[in-house]
Length: 212
Image 1 (cartoon, rainbow, N blue to C red):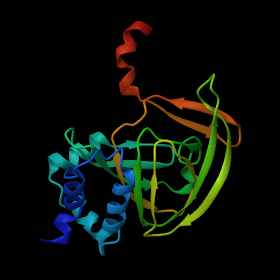
Image 2: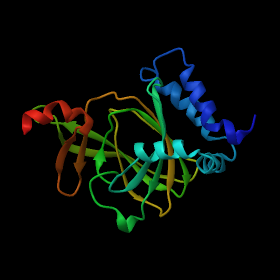
Image 3: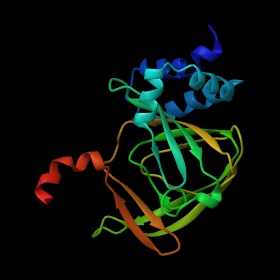
Image 4: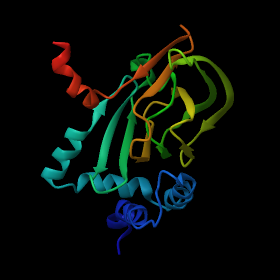
């Protein structure tokens, strides 16, 4: 079997065949992901995957993908019957970043594993104190700062808080994400000391008419 054909498919098959809840045992997902990410030629494999996408699948990738203030998030795979999704993050040039996303201290609604395919970034992990009244971040403390080059892998749970303050121009990462663990995520601006709660727009439709 060709590596070019099987890289994404093999990871998807391994995750789909797991005889346990991926969310409950994300450390095992991380072990599998690290082994998968070490395979030679992964970046070239993903390049060929994109080049060989049929038009309908390429259109589906475009529809699922989105732009953030710091990067383009390309959704390579999202099937309703699978407990995971695959993404390719294409970071913008640092001069084009706007504050409020990767460069803020934040968590996610899902667990994820990631590997750097090109470039690199500085990755910071934080301890966050949540205000019980507002349910938002009240303060943070830096606990680990790690330069991450090509080939580096990371795993974060939905409860983990992190930040990417800078990335080399041209940085690209591949991610496997779990399904939603929490209904919202939180962010904290280290400069203004302001916290925010982020609720996905798709969950707000049922309330839309009542707000008109």
